Image: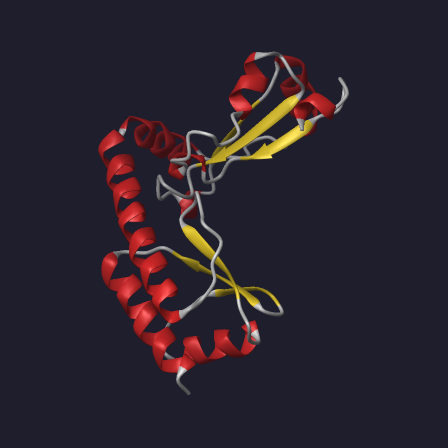
Length: 182
């Protein structure tokens, strides 16, 4: 795609889930940044680092792009606690490795269970699974909600489920089996 984008056109890459990526063929936006391209790479501490409540992230871009963005940026857009937490999170490799491992295990479990149930899914490089369904997503959402499970409807017949801890994944599958049989 980047080969077809003319110079002077800013490409924004949302990499909120980049720390979960395991596919070696996954697109490398940093290559384009290092090549000096007009790209803004957005990353967050909300996902694998677990700092969603602090609302902190960062962007990578060429200096001229950052200079223009700073003209529009409101002052004090992050607080010092969030900044300190983000700096600590960057040093916590053990937490990141554990989060990746738990996600990989959960992804494998959910894939196997969904396949057993005959439910289609889109393989993921994130911490959630997208499922195109053969039923109304809103109805399934409400049925699961009554079972204490929250999924995200993504369209008339699509949902997204977050990969959780082992017990949470088992609970989701139990609830899904129950509502599919009703």
